[in-house]
Image (cartoon, rainbow, N blue to C red; front, side):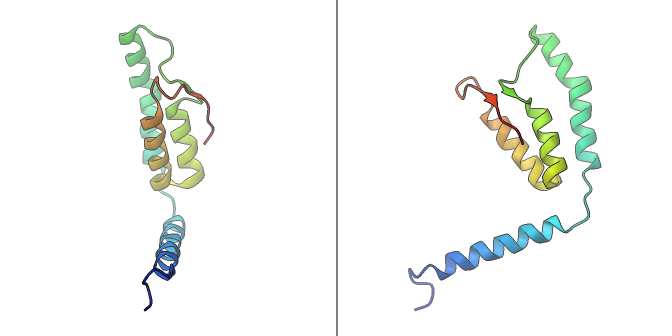
Length: 103
C-alpha cells in the first residue's frame, strides 16, 4: 500500500528535487555569459527602448528587472537566477503595481 495517499511519494519526490537542485549548485559556475548578456542589454538595448518609447523608466519595480536578474544570477547561479529573472519579468506589468522587490 506504499504510495496510496500516505504522502511517502510526495516526500520522496521532494527529496529527489532537493538533491537535484543541490547537485546543480555544486557544478562550477559558468555565469559569465549570462551576466555579460544582461550587461549588454543594460548598456545598449534598454536605453534604445526607452529612447524609442520616450520614457525615462519602464520597470515598475525597484531594482529594475535586469538588475534583479543580475543579482539573482550572482546569488543563485545561472540556471536558477535566470528562472527567477524570467518570473520577475512576468510579474512586471501595470496591474501588479511594482515597488521594492530585492533578489
